[in-house]
Length: 280
Image (cartoon, rainbow, N blue to C red):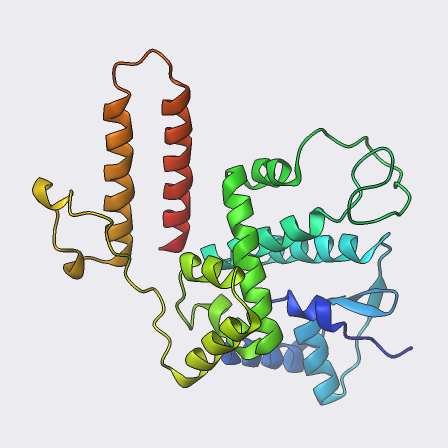
């Protein structure tokens, strides 16, 4: 058998098992062997990285199967879908994978001419592409909003950047061992490499303040009997703020017959609730 290649870029997008889960998998393989073939593309491992690590560590036999894809983007697309199908994902993990799919799918040819702004390969045989943007198509697939998918892309960009600096820090974030908000990740996605390095260092040193509280833009809620923000959970503060802002919009348009602004505000409020739900 030819040597199996580990692609660093592909591996960067895969979640790492924590020590307990890895030990459980190792014991299972030592007891029963590897019953699922490792999956390869052009000799590159695309599914079974943890199993391969354990098998080579103990010199155990295993089988492989090969799959064909037209491009690296198609491979990564399949890998992410495979992860989503195989795992019970946390909200942050699901957000990460949706974001990776969005960033990857934008590079895949989906028009009849076989071209987009990312590549010049020939179009593949298959069904004709739909007149949907990548965000719209994935939003429909995962039953979320288009804006949620785009925010997921920012989350994914930040986590990938962290993983390039420190794979273990990325593992800790995706496993939930280190708490970090989507807002912090989206801010980091717009930052520099130095910003990423600083966050990684803080996480490794245990000085990172994850899930920091969100301050209110005004004290308008206090008059309505709202609790002191210092005594509230971060999600309570965020929910109270977004709800009060939504109420103000509804009141200002209560008598208008034009529901365009109301519908847009309601859609935004729903998107924000979805993000809050997945962040708790």
